[in-house]
Length: 241
View 1 (cartoon, rainbow, N blue to C red):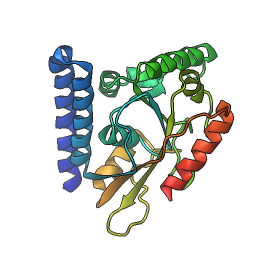
View 2 (view 1 turned 60 degrees about the horizontal axis):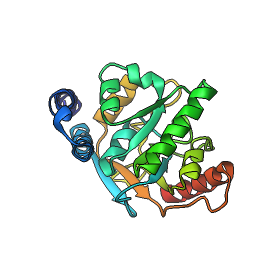
View 3 (view 1 turned 60 degrees about the vertical axis):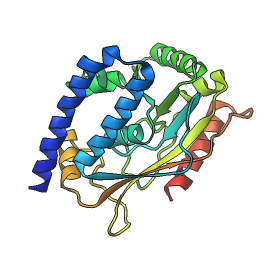
């Protein structure tokens, strides 16, 4: 019954988000849009029964590239609730019903991962956004894991921070059960998991807490993108412990 109530609240809040996009967004300045997206994401977590814990120093402004480990579809909501940012995401999401509309309104930059030319285009666009003092976010693993380990980081997108001389902030994400303090795998979205199944497990979960830990900002300091990506990954692993 609790899960069904949460499901209804989630769907109603999705509807509110769409109304916000179509009715209010055209008249809002960018800062107001960003604040509205952050508030919407925070409320959505409440609708899902997920509490948010934020640790570390949250970047107040750009330019900055947030680099986080990736566990679930829920990560984007969690990151937006902690600090509004523009995500770099696979192009497929742009065409997903409802989700694509919400992601685009939140300022998502889309990339066709199979296309080297498109990857270069996105890196150039990211560098331009960073030079314009924006806050961007990436999941350098390129896919989701179960949260117990952090996969190797792809280094390509770090080139944007190097080109723009912008810092990277490592971000550690994890989900825990507040009663036991142990890791929760309810929101995981890996392997044979379906999105519907992952959402339903999340709705059914009790005492679920999303923990976001922002680490100190790093500058390239002469490192190439591969060395920098490896060092940021090491920092993310420490932030999750």
